[in-house]
Image 1 (tube, helix red, strand yellow):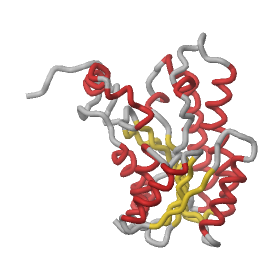
Image 2: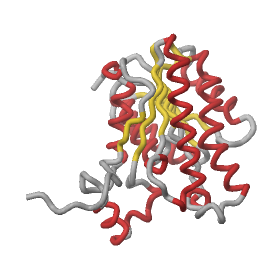
Image 3: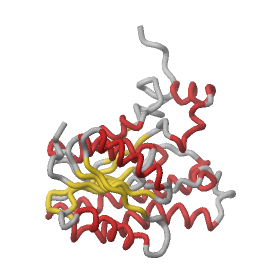
Image 4: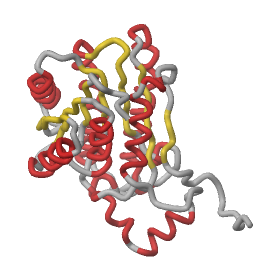
Length: 262
């Protein structure tokens, strides 16, 4: 702990789920954390309050990603909260939370509106947020993008969503090369099935059992599993790691089921 004392961080989509877990972990490690949220101010304030009660520091930043002016709104709120400090860590966690878009179905069922929405939030917003924040980011900083197992495993019901995550991984590798001259590392974390509010379907016994059965480590992921992976990439220990995608799925879909060991 205390690896990030004196550092600052922005975590998008940090009012709940994995984003909240990431924000809490970075704050626990000593960073001042900007908690970005779309519209649920109560949830964002709960994240900030939880961090402060644990002895950390944080402030909320509101902006709805995917709309005109979204990046400018984030930057304005971030600058106000940082009060002249540079940014050290950017975690692009926010993703399209519209379940109709996330699970829109195979190619014959995705509408242009759904396609545009998921790309606006999951690809366009983080791309231009990075662009806008680079002048504010200190040399030696960290950019950590959240991808998904769906970029590795073919899930036809998530085709548009999966395409956005493939784009994010390509963006990360390309930016790692460009930003290396400043000592800024750019990496991606790819979670699998993770028990968050948006994934309530995982509570169904049949689905939970099925997901557990195809996971090498034998359980569903938790937000803190992802937060710990992000915290490592944000730390000094990861200073020589860039252009990587860290699979944080517990080993999902590694191959056909095998016989029990022992």
